[in-house]
Image 1 (tube, helix red, strand yellow):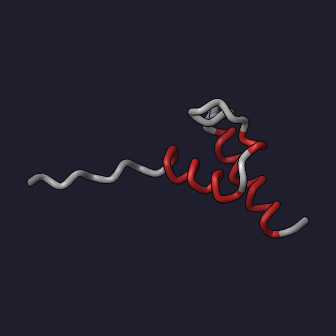
Image 2 (cartoon, rainbow, N blue to C red):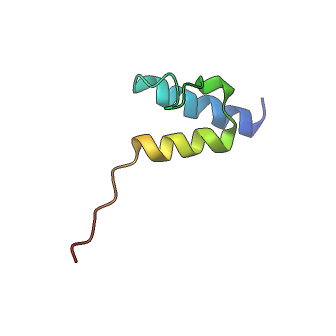
Image 3 (tube, rainbow, N blue to C red):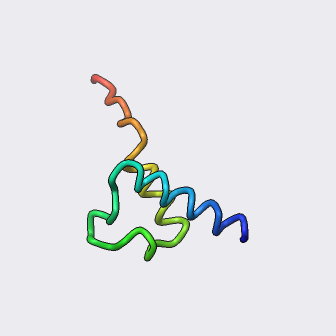
Length: 54
C-alpha cells in the first residue's frame, strides 16, 4: 500500500468517525482525491479561526 493511499484511507476514517459520509455537494468520500480529502478535513474538523475585532 502506498503512503498516499494509506493517508487517504486515514483521512476517510477520520471523517467517518465524525459521521461525515459525503461532502456538502453530495460526493461520497471515496470519490475524492487526496487533496480534496485534506481540504475537507481542514474545513470541517479544524477549529474556526478567530475573527479579529476591528
